[in-house]
Length: 346
Image (cartoon, rainbow, N blue to C red; front, side, top):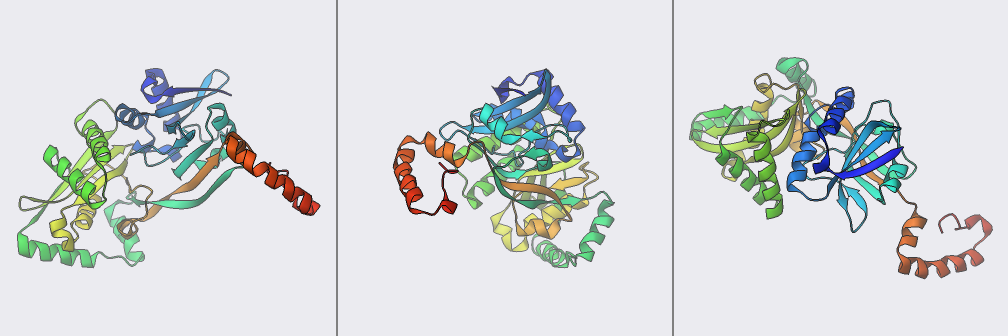
């Protein structure tokens, strides 16, 4: 295997087309989260986004995008890129330790690894989970039937909606909204509620405006908003590709919190799926109560860490630690019975 590492900004048009070709034949990698333009866009506003190009002979067979932490020599998750994956053919197997070693990394941190069945590793620590989704393959009526069978009827949400309309006027949902002020207010609410810093807000603003108001990508930015009279109640921003709408940011007006405007917004997003042109609504990998409330399917993911070096190699790389532990281990060898031999670790 031949491997090259380049900043994501140096991904050529031919490489991008090859990436899209591979993605189109791997159903596990459907949607905007695995599209090269997402990583290219984040790389415009965020430093240290790289991609490892994985060749078999002279054929480009895979892509590993990651955020490089130079100090720790680790591949880390990229902001706003909610899933991790090696973009490659469905049947291809990857020896991840060899890849990490060849690109000079000690580990690869994965909060939500997709298409993990094709990855081979002896140094992986993690667990399989499910990222929650709404699957509308059988239409909205089929979705409601799924939720009814799960004993979820949305009756409490309907009461809150009626109560708010009685006090403030009719609720209006705009599936497609182009108002920048809505976008900025949504990000301000998100920043305050989740205590995000200004660096996150700047990156979020640049990235969302790029996808919302740029026609340079096949990924389509979707901004939706919920109003009561002319007051903004809640807003959503997602990316759409291949019939998958992926949620990036959603926030609500704190003045109306008791009426659950965020939940009312989600319900409208789901019921208007045909107008928004999607079949799968992807909530992303985090686990929140509202996601369990609305979801009727999951995407299998692994949360964990791949190590490219053994414990012995990592300790040896930290000279002072190795020098301090070596005599301790040697002393333990002399004191312990043979069956507790520690030589495999040092």
